[in-house]
Length: 309
Length: 125
Image (cartoon, rainbow over all chains, first blue to last red; front, side, top):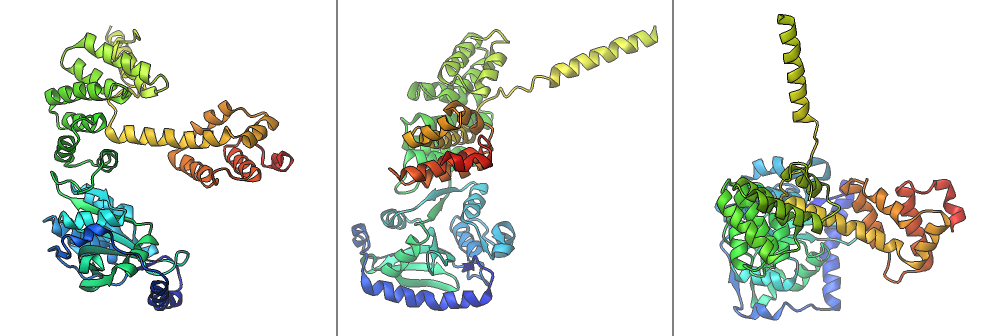
């Protein structure tokens, strides 16, 4: 649990108020779990548990996700990596970045429906909860590992509690107050249950290490998406598999003929393969599509040897 | 003779290194991350510029002799983080918001872009 305030006294008060408030809220209305939670009516994933130390729910939650991936999830090491002492907490984006740096795909899970879909696909979900009030937050990271009773109860590794259960009603409110922030962290080749092409591209684009197998899986899932094909082509090029990269760039511009960066890169790949006229043609197409791009303008100068298009 | 050779050599070295370092070209392959970042930046610029297209906004611009092109040019000089802040301001405008709301948001953005002296703000309202 983390508290983005200064006073320790307020923290205690907030901790006291949170359950009280949840009780009051649950008295006024109920939010049913999505229907898909009825089949199967219960599910429990096998996820290693790490108990958190004071305030350090972020590193502990991340550690569990890493261990589920078969990677070392040493909490102490992760504290140094993602914990911010002055905030007494970890930032969500840093948890994602830490996973990405290990070649894992962090993909957002931001609706109750997708939460259950991922659990049903066998993927634990790291969620952010606000255990107190919207304007007086007590942030907490936990890992959803299953559910019971048609989704009426959620099973979580949370804080120092292993496989604790929480009423759906209470859980979903704390999650909603954190804008339904959550993500799965998946190994190469594995895709989220409810994956869409554009969010997948956004999730993979910043990945520096071990991205290639993820791009291959992405393209296998969305073979007609030019933008994902572009990501694959770039990853192949970065891995020095130039012949395959060239083919992937060619395929990209066939699928997404308006994508200027693809024509730009195709020009370099063609030149590398000794096809200078083809390179010139490609870079000039990029120029037509992106007349304002400095990058493309300089590429034109470089590829055409200063002649221009 | 030896001196001459050294001189010629130095000249060559100078020429050569200049040739290497002078063209500060950005020419390169575009990374996937770079493409995404560019697109996000363009979307944020669009957000701010769309606000400028509203009637109330156009009036403020005209009163202060600022064209949308001026705004666009200034936006291009902002860092991603600064642009993000402006786009958030534009976002906070409720859809179909009040005229005064639009005017205030536009003035704020113009001040931040340094297109308006802060002292001119009140006459603009």
